[in-house]
Amino acid sequence: MDELEYDALRLRQWLSGEARGFSRRDLLRLGAALGAAGGALGVAGALSVPGTALGAAPGGATAGGAARAGAAPGGAAASDAAGADATRVSAAAGPIVKPLPAELFKVFGTNAETRWSALKGVGYHVPVDRFFVRNHTSTPVIDSATWALEVFGAGLRGAPRSFSLADLRRLPSVTRSVAVECAGNGRGYFASQQGQTVSGTAWGLGAVGVGRWRGVRLSTVLRAAGISSRAVDVQASGLDPNFVSGGVDLGPVRRPLPVSKALADVILAYELNGQPLPADHGHPVRLVVPSWIGIASIKWVGRIEVSDEPLFSPWNTQFYRLFGPGFPAEGLPFDRQSIKSAFELDPGATFPAGAVSRLTGRSWSAAGRIKRVEVSTDGGATWRRARFTGRSADAAWQRWEIDWRPEAGDHVLLARATDVRGTTQPQVARFNTLGYLFDAAVRVPVTAV
Ligand SMILES: Nc1nc2c(c(=O)[nH]1)N[C@H]1C(S)=C(S)[C@@H](COP(=O)(O)O)O[C@H]1N2
Ligand SMILES: [Mo]
Image 1: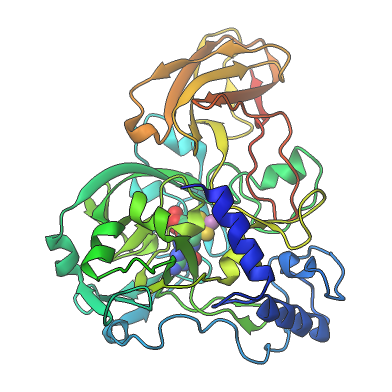
Image 2: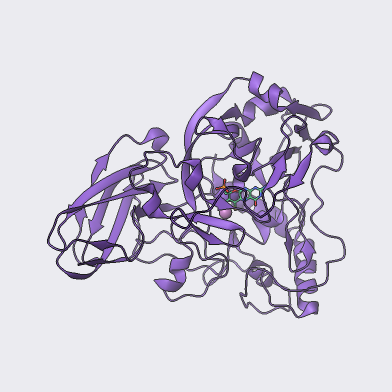
């Protein structure tokens, strides 16, 4: 499976109008609607498409009060599939159901990132009480007894198939440690460390979590549903409320996968860390897509379309593309996460001066196992090798430690990892207007007193 080839092919198909779900025309119409309303232009992606009169001003995350684009380009999900309609879904009191205590989370509207200090000493997997939440809208409360998954589309040999949760639990299960990480994790450092303006949630490094996911392989379900050799793309959609951007209803959160990835290592998960999937993380069933950006791991899956033609959604055309200098005007699609390291502490932490403290952290890479981690306690002037601690289950991330005896005063810590492919975290991450894939070593200010 070569994702770069897949992305390049889909980009050509999308540009040439061979698109279903969210065409270039839909994107232009969306751009026109936002432009006509004169709103703050939030869909930075839409603005760089050649042929639009709109300037490339990346604005806030959403545009205010724009008119609806004629035909909402969103409704691509299964209108021809009935089963998921019986699922009882209700709204929670707020966008996130679980408690978000300040010592565990930093909250950004409908999203909450894990504080890295909350991962000190907690073991390999991130407990649910501190697992980050990234919601486009809000967590739906889904009655798993009435929930059904509808698998449909022209890429099946026959009629749509419906699966209850009990049906899925009867199929052979797999359990894997997999990192789910938002494509925008670390975005805040484009501004604070590189002085660059990007749009979107200003995450620190806490929009990542390794969970122990149990479920059924997506390939098992697709085969049970009668996937045919004509199948091209597989697209799950969520049962959370439709995402509205700039007054335009983009439909349910959804994003296509090539059939090769869908059949390779994707899990339809119904458990996290040995418990039924919690509401905020996709109850009763979500996708878990190893190595790919978090948006691929669709939560609260209600429908899965198996198409016999390329599929597109706003989540691989206007969002989750790389825009900016050096990137194609229509944006560079991408799917894979990058490489990062984090100390298990919060910026501004204090240490006893003159005494030995143990610094701990974790490093991870979508390309595979971490080979080496180096730590600097003097702002990047000198580096020492960190010791690995514990095994790295399924190579999801690697924990490490290093001892340090600071003198009184201010210090800047950095950690940089090298993965099995030989990729080392750079000093500077490549700028893109939507702030994705920050991979540079992060400078962490601390004080010894
Ligand atoms: N249905 C649905 N699935 C979704 C999302 C969403 O808003 N709705 N957010 C995506 C994004 S951007 C990320 S990073 C991950 C976050 O997973 P988590 O909230 O379980 O940590 O879920 C993905 N799946
Ligand atoms: Mo994300």
